Length: 401
Ligand SMILES: *Cc1c(COP(=O)(O)O)cnc(C)c1O
Image (cartoon, rainbow, N blue to C red; front, side, top):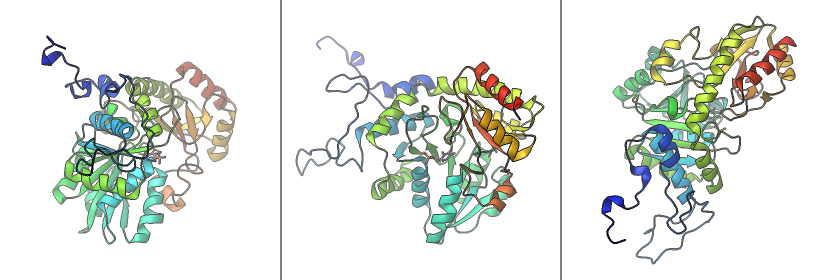
C-alpha cells in the first residue's frame, strides 16, 4: 500500500469521535472481519480458542466462551459506547444482568434500597431468592429523594432504581438519587430498559451502573432474551465481569448477533414508536370509556416536568385503565385484533399486558395495592405499525365494552 499515508489506512470506525447516536448504534464496537471482510461481525459459534503456546496464553484475547466471546464482545462494546460507559457485560437475560449487579454489590448482612415500582421479576428476585441469603431490601418510593435518604442504613451498599418504572411509568430523578448515593459511598444502578440510551443516559446524570433487558428495545423484534450491565469505571466493571464468568449466566453468540442487528435501527424505531405512543395516549385520554392514562409525554402526567428534564423523549410505553374495572379490561383485550396479548415490550409489534396476572403476578397483592398497580391496570407497548391502524383497533375494542 505504498503511497497511502497513515491517515488513509482503514481504522476502527467505532473509535471515531464524536459521532451521533445513530452512527454509533450502527458502527460502534464492530469492524469488518479481518479475515474475509464480512461487514457483519461473524457469529463466533465456538466453545474454545486455540492458544499459540503456554507462554502466549490469551494473546488473542480469548480462551473459552464463558469467559468471553468475540460476537458478544462486539455487542458489549456497542452498548458501552451508546451509554457512554467504561465497559459492558452481557447476560442470558435481563434478570441475569440484575443478578450480576446484586451479587457484585451485596453480601449477606448488607442492604439495598430498590424502587417500589419495578419489573415484577426484580421484586421476586430480591424477596424470593436474595433475602434467603441474608441480603436485606427496602422497597422505597424512589420518586421521592427524601424517602430514599430515610431508607438508607449503615449497611446499605446499593440503590437500584428503575425509571420510567414498569408498569406504571413512575419516574425517579436519577441526578438527585445519584447525589445521595455518592455522598454516602453507595452504588447507584439504574434499570434503563424503558427509554434506552437514545432517550436517557443515567451515567451522564451521575449514576454508576446501567442495567438493560436487551430483550426489549435493543433487540426490538421479539427474537431473543438477553441482558446487559454498563459500568462507568474499571473498579465497578471488574467485579461484575468476574461474576459474569464465575456464575456463567452469559449471552450466547447467536443472541448477541441478533441483538447487534437490532441495535442498528434502535433510534429510528424508538422515535417512531414514541410518536405513535404520544398519539395513542392522547386518543385514550380523550376517550369517554378510559378512566386514567399514564404516559410521561402527557401534560397531565404527574411527573411530566421530571420526565421532560431528564430524558430526551418519553418512550413508547403507556398504562391505562378503563371504566368498568377488570371485567371491562378483559373484554377490551379480547376484542383487540392487531394489538397482541403478550408479555414483552419494546418490539415492533404492539403488545398489551395485564400486569397483575402477567408481569407482576409475583408481587404481593398488598405491595401492588400500596404502589398503585391496580387489578384493572393495562400496559401497552406501542409498536411500529401505522398509528391509524392501532387507533382503529383500540377504538373498535373500546366500542365493545
Ligand atoms: C423485562 C424487564 C426485565 C427483565 O428482563 P428479561 O430479559 O425478561 O429477563 C428487567 N427490567 C425491566 C424494566 C424489564 O422490562
